[in-house]
Image 1 (spheres, rainbow, N blue to C red):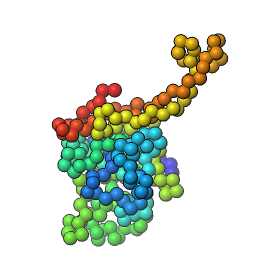
Image 2: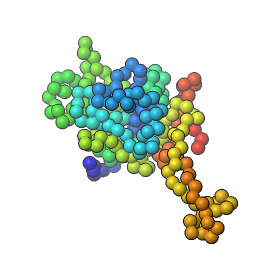
Image 3: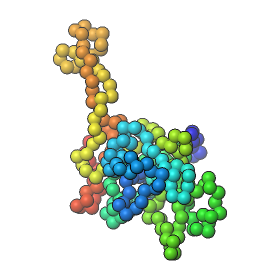
Image 4: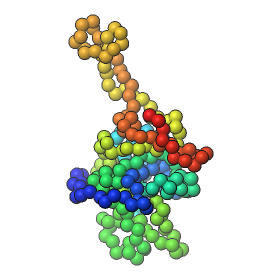
Length: 234
């Protein structure tokens, strides 16, 4: 599915944010949507982040009340993000994408619709909606400030462009993805990288690497004790 961007968004105001976060987990009191497979449910948030970084994609799932798979994000300015982490107990593991990138990928804010409004929408639009009701059948998720990106049902994964993840949020400043062997280089007798046809018979060596999305991004750490978001020096 190719989305053609139709323009540039205006600058974010003080109640908005230029970054949108895709959390790799949900609070323990919040249920996952039924369409999330058990093998993903069984993963810890940092394991999901690890997989996203190495796969270079975020898998989308149909939200409640819809059959259309979506990738979900939150537009949370820093103070609101701190509140989500400290008071709503969101796990501090996720990827932050630029708001413009999300728009260019076909994303946009969800529609918070009251029950009677929701009933008027055709099924193909339900993936963009979150039911909003404060009565006995309560559904109040306004604090999530949600955006969504639709993904194709036959391949429900959002491929992340190389420069699309400027910030990664972690809950442990020492954490990083597991290194994997991704390329082979040739080295000479002094251990320096060399051309394979160079004199001296350079030897092939497998080089472990970290995923590009990780090495290219700024990293933030949620300090639970001080209730602060801190940048990790790279």
